[in-house]
Image (cartoon, rainbow, N blue to C red; front, top):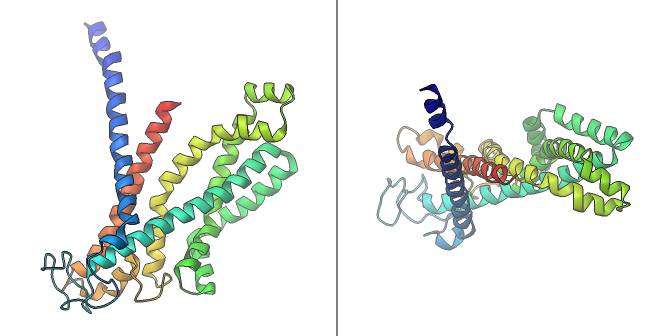
Length: 286
């Protein structure tokens, strides 16, 4: 009896079915990420109105004719401002992650491959940045440079690369110690070919998964800085700034501050879920 139960519990068919179900869910999540990216790309083409100019009555409710998500306190279309803000937040987050991945990747690969004093110096610099309160440092940099989306991206990028440097360095060090890399070195393979052909490809999946899981965090940080007034100056459409500027309407016209806040939630949630999906797909191919 116990053997039958064990057979049913650990059935290879059931295991395979679970793997396929997990991969299907992962592809759906990645598809959501792709759909969100497409919306961000065409946001300026599908906005019904100018996001900066008043186009209707003040504080029109949800579902108003011509204004699906209503209007704000000065009559600007909320849907148009949300779509523009979504585009700004999404591509800004992608830019920060890309910069962090490139800078951190270069530092991590250099430290992992070179070893010795090069590794020690690069990792001590990385540890120095990791020891700093990243959010406060980003706020200080943006405050020093002045409000603006470019300065915000600079401030976040400065503190974001060390995480990738640490992760990629660990992956590179583990790969360098593997037999096939040692065999290639003994066979006389040049350093550049050794790095790009035998070492670097092993770190790419880890880097992709880490970056995909990180986008949601960057979206939240960007929205937070924008909420504090460190994003693009008004009247630029930004999700965090729109929420902050209309908090006094939370009881009288709740949709005005809530809609951009929900957009931030959707961006972060989709990014995190898609990151989990990418991790599942990459892990299943290893």
